[in-house]
Image (cartoon, rainbow, N blue to C red; front, top):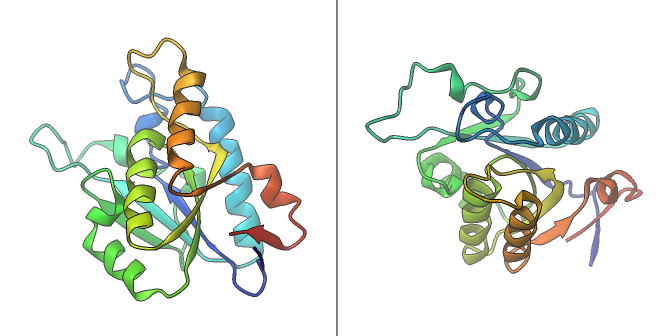
Length: 187
C-alpha cells in the first residue's frame, strides 16, 4: 500500500546519534560512521525542509559504571534536536523503556515511523520488535543505520544479518527510495 507522504507524513525517528559512536578507542565506535552520519543528515534535512515531524532517541544507561557528566552521550552537533522536535531519553535498549516515549506512541493512532541512526543491534532492533508487538509500524532505512561490531570479523555480514532479522518486524528501505519516492512512502 502506498500512502502520500504529504497527506500523512511519517515521523522520522533518529536513534542514538551520540558522540560515543564517533569517539576513537571506544568499544562503541562505528567504522562507517561518517557515511551513516551524512545519510542521516540528508534525511533529517529532507524532513526539516518539508516541516515533517522528527523524533530523537538518546540512550542514557543507568548502570553503576555510567557517568552522566561524560560528553560521550552528547548529540552529534549537526544531528542534535532543534526546537519543535521531540526528544526522548531511554535507559534500556528499547526506546519504549522511556515512559514518555511509550505513552506518546500509545496515544498516537495510525502512526508510521521511519527509523535511522546508530545502535542498530540494540536500540533499533529492540524498539522495532517491541513496536511490532504494540502494533506500531516502522520502516528502517538500511543504509542510514549502523552498529558497533565488537569481536565481529565481517562487520558487513553482521549488519546484514541484523537488518534481515529486523525485516521480520518492520519494513526495510534505502534512503534513495525515500528521496525519489515522488511524495509516496511504502507502508
